[in-house]
Image (cartoon, rainbow, N blue to C red; front, side, top):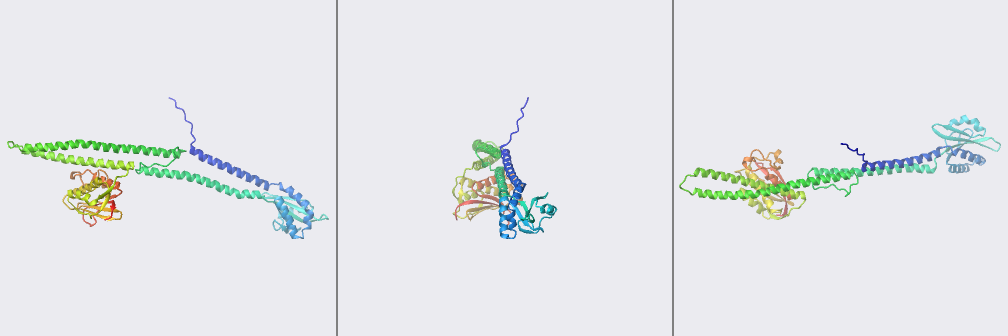
Amino acid sequence: MTSAIRPVRRSSLFRRIYGTFVVTFLLAAIVVGTGVWFAARALGNDWMPDAIDRLDLENDELVSALRDEPRLGGLLETIDRELGTHTAIYDLDGNKILGNGPPHVPARAHRRERQLKRGRPAILRQESDRPVVMFPFADGAGEVVAFAHVIGAPPPRVRIILWVLPLLIAAFGLGAWRLAQSLTSRISTLELGVGRIAHGELAHRIPGPARPADEIDELGAAVNDMAARLDRLVAGQRTLLANVSHELRTPISRVKVLLEILHERLERLTGDAHADHSTTIERVRTGITEMGEDIVEMETLITDLLTSGRLELRAGEGRPMDVEPVDLAAVVSRSASRFRAQLDVPPGLSVRGDAFLLERLFSNLLANARRACPDGALEVTAVHDGSSLLIRVQDEGHGIPAEQREAVFEPFRRLDEARSRDRGGVGLGLYLCRQICAAHGGTLVAQARLDGRNGASLCARLPAASAC
């Protein structure tokens, strides 16, 4: 079996970055080349013949102006402006009379002194300096009376380029910075989105265009697709769990009916006075009672699973809960009467929530407290705290160790002693309680008792519907 070699695909992101650098390099090369060309023209030797001819033409005028400094300055300024040079006039001793040049004739000009005094111009060259033209001025008798020191200066257009070049470099740097900022901001958005999805927000989606423009957009679309698949998978599992729990309630109901029938038949059997069935009857009664307790526990478990699944499904789909003002005292009192709990709930306190779920919340909290404290006192207190209600359920049991006060809210988590399996409960009660509080926009935490006595204190904070 042969396989074709796939050509390497130049990614669009690579093309964007590569193209940006190529264009930047070409523009920089054009600017630098232009600058070099102008500089070469300014620093080359083209100006020297023009300067010699112009000084020779202006010889008599300049000699006559040696003693008239303003006139001599004007002539030199005109020559420098037209030729783009810097010119200075020196006497025969090498001291500067006027102009733009060093105070004294350069030392290397003395090597050409004989040539200059004969009235012949000299060109001085040195590797580290630009060329210099030394021109002798002669009077009417042919005697040399002064020297001109001329050096080429960059024309104004070269100065303009030297000013524009840093601006162009700054513009290129700004463009590169904008490109880098665009890329890093998109990557940062992608990172934050992936982090939120990794922390369980499967409904979150990374923003991006409808049609990906490059690999970053494609990666964001792939992450969104992955999150959507995970969301559907988790939602499907929750739906399956809810459906299974719902379907299991039917056979349990039938078993409960059967138990009632068995109880009725057992009563008839006990009415037969001619036979001694007391031992058998007692065993049957005990077995049926235990079976009934197991079925009630199974029903509670399935109800908790069904409620938990519905809450997770609603939260995953982002559907709000239907809430209404619920009288707190009425809801708590119904659960407290079953578990012999003492109430300290002022009248008039209302909670915004679902009455069925709130009753389930307090029923589970009190059932958990009663299992931890079979014979002690249970207390339920409620106070108005700003925009929320603070409800505490306290027992006199062994309490919850500080290192396990968060772990008790994990599903199927039980403490070893008071909350062990043989004392009832499967470890879903507190997990479901926290889910109910979260669905109402509240919190549930485990604490030590406020009075310092042994026992646990479970504190639920729920949004208040009205003040007390």
